[in-house]
Image (cartoon, rainbow, N blue to C red; front, side, top):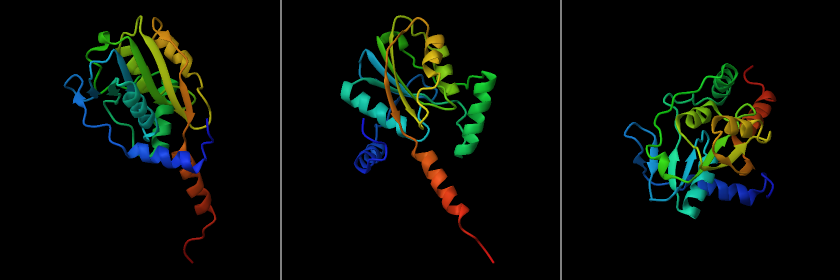
Length: 197
């Protein structure tokens, strides 16, 4: 894997992030979105900043899978630090955030690629909720994970405990923390500026 600071790689990732995944059809008539192609493989993903969405789109297009965007019923705050704090509270309390919608036809899939960012060294609470809401017994579960430099954390054990009857495979892991790096760089820069008088 190339360095995350590679400017060519970053330009490609930025370009891919702007590609539309297309308008998706409603999964269960309640909100979450699913594109159905008749495939026996589903790519389900949660993405806050777009990094995981890019990987999901690449898998979806390359393998011609069905696609489902996991969304919480109540969105996380736009502010990064507010989201970090709320996710920490949910993680520490074990609370699972309600889903906007479920995959209506999960029984039709043999393989599920599950994508998410690492939050607080684990899978986001909305991923635990997704796994709790869907029976993945006998299905092959392949994670794809983006993280901000801390690796997988305990996310693999979360997947194993919430989908104990799935065949959990090794997945794809990529460092992608532009949001945090940008925030830190701007804060460092602002720390050196004197405003006013």
